[in-house]
Amino acid sequence: MSEPEDFHVEVTEAGPVVRARLVGSLDGETVPVLLGTVEPLLDAAEGLVLDCGPLAFCDSSGLRGFVLLRNRLAAPAAFRLEDPSPGLRQILAITGLEALVGEPT
Amino acid sequence: VEAAPRIPVESHAELYDGAPCGYLTTLLDGTIVRANARVYEWTGWDPEDLVDRRRFLDLLRVGSRIYYETHYAPMLQLQGRVADVALELVGIHGQAVPVIAGSVLVPAGDAAPGHIRTTLVDARGRQEFEQELVRARREAEESESRASDVARTLQRSLLHGGLTSGAGFVVETRYRPAVETLEVGGDWYDAFLVQDDVVAISVGDVVGRGLAAASAMGQVRSALRALSDLGQGPGPVLDRLDHFVGRVPGAWMATVAIVEVTPATGLVRYASAGHLPALVLEPDGATRLLWDGRSHPLAALPRDTPRPQATTTVPPGSSILLCTDGLIERHGRDIDEGLRAWADSATELRALPPAERADRMLADLLVDEDVRDDVCLVSLSLQPETASGTI
Image 1 (tube, rainbow over the protein chains, first blue to last red):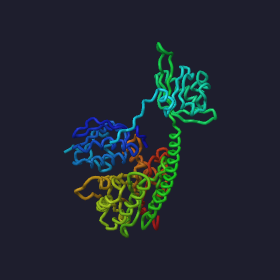
Image 2: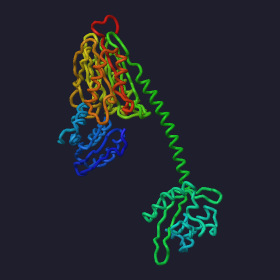
Image 3: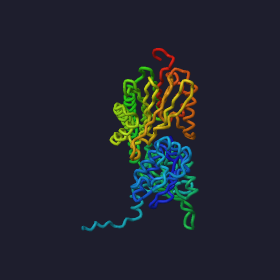
Image 4: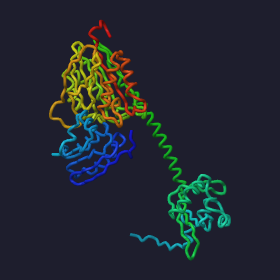
């Protein structure tokens, strides 16, 4: 397991569409950092874009975090994972969660 | 509103000696120039014993002295102030008074040489509080380890009762708990008859660890068995599980793979909710991953179409394997490399009997330090065509 300091979130936009960069290793130990940082911003938000470019690792707990955040939005389709690595793309494909990389509507 | 009773302005001396904390003024070498009544009360020294005769250092216990010389004094020199340092005073009768100390350095000026002002806050209560914390934490840890025993027992009993063989097939199941943690995970496996001539194997993973995960796992596993009785195949079973999972706290986003096999014909029906694909090992060593019949984890996203399932056939003597991600996932390795390693291992071990193959597969694919996660492995092996009688 990672330590909480192995992961952090940079919120780059907190407007109607919240944008954040995910940096490091996202798993059961670090997913509370993601939820704790992003969830409070979603009350007024219409969309959420998570930049996964700097994400080095993501396991099933991380995926669960993504789906939790997606389902927190009034319009869940306005959730998007941006720039997933080939590895993350593959995990999303295996878990049948490709919909998380869709364009917001 | 009644006026508060007036309190006359205190003299500096009253404020100084009557303060609830200790004050010390020392020279730069630590020699005590002045101390307030609180310091004398705590230590039992008289003013004539301390002033000009002893240094602050002399009031400290050995451990604190070392800390004072190596950290406190140098920091004070460098930064001009030190705050929030835990030290222990020692009195004339050897009594210890834990304090929180802070100092400021007053540089030399026209009126006075450089000196140091130090405040000492009584920390005896805090120390007791910390001991309380330590005790409470130890008790919590003990109770947690009891809970972890309970969870492990529960998990073992929940995983019990799977089918091990039947007409034309044998099932091997392996479960290896994570090395790093004492908490049980939410991985499960099962094997059971769907109809007289159809056998099902399943594996799954409930997110999270501990008692809650073990109990959620048990409920999903039992529900899966019950729902499979309908004989409509694994896709509809997953649809029904979606509804069920909505009522089981902790089971949301669980993944599950189901493979139903008719041993007599080699017909395979399978589906996966967010889980790793099943692996087919044919008797000649050829392998393929069953990628179809795939959809998202249980209850993760709303659905307006039924869950898919897929069909294939396998030749006699084939094995179908399922595992949880602990066998495949590694930091710094893409998942397809993990899947390839799994398939390669199956090919290499194709000639071994199923039980031995399962043992070797775990041993080959897992190096101990890699086992960060629980690992389940299930294999269903069909009787070879040429064999007579049981395997």
